[in-house]
Image (tube, rainbow, N blue to C red; front, top):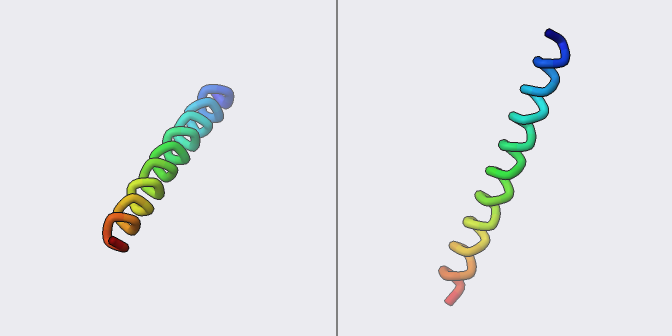
Length: 36
């Protein structure tokens, strides 16, 4: 049971990290577009 919880937390963490990375890239792209 504890293992399942840890696994779920780890998966959520990985997904959120990936989302954050994509989001930051998206923001950087917007800034680059606006700089022109």
